[in-house]
Length: 340
Image (tube, rainbow, N blue to C red; front, side):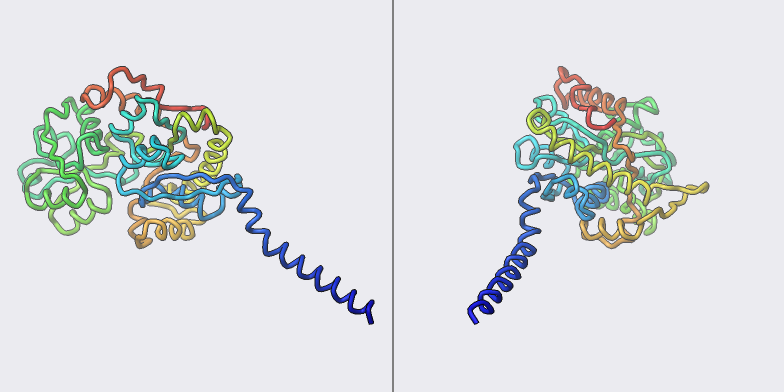
């Protein structure tokens, strides 16, 4: 009788230990992951980050990544500089380069960019301005153009257009409206002649008859719109972390590119492998309908390579605008050792 009871205890004890071991496995694995964080905007351009998080690519690299959402491009590099997040991915602004000039941030891989054949940012003329002769991007010289803020990506897009067509930002009147909804209100109210608008906004303006799309920034002036960045301190003191992060990011970049960036001979999007799955991931992360996301998917370079010449041009442009310290060396804002 004693032997039977003792045997039963052994069996039950073994079963309990096994159950506890199984229950504890996820927690043990989680404790083995290195914690880190990234600041992002709820935009399709952040898609590769959302994909890497959702599909477990960060975890495969041994990372537990916390996504922190921000509402403007300038907030993200500030968060990296202050140490609130370890990494950031967003559009490049004068504010970013100001922080870079102080040694607070450095680019380590590419994000989205305006690319020929990809409809990401449009030049849109009001009906009145179009009827009066504003029919192509080069005609924007001398016109009133709505932008978000001085130092924004829209500001640089105006400058790039001028560089191509022989005028400067001083030859146009940029009307800073703080955000895109206010830009649209100024456009519809006739306070400006034109706007550079995200694709979904541009198509809406054209569909309702209040504006005419004159062309696309990617076709006129391709440029490096966004980047993945971190602090030089992270690179120096936690390089293995940064290398693991970039590795997972590049896996997602390649998958994003294969799914969304293929075009046929007519320029129409060809749905690549995993299109619907990845679109659903981005739609959930950005809290948008899949069809809205699909209409504004930007081009990403599948290997994460930066357009170095354009980054150099951005620095020179902002220096000429008095927005960035003239002592800043453009090459110092990029660490090209993470992307081969």
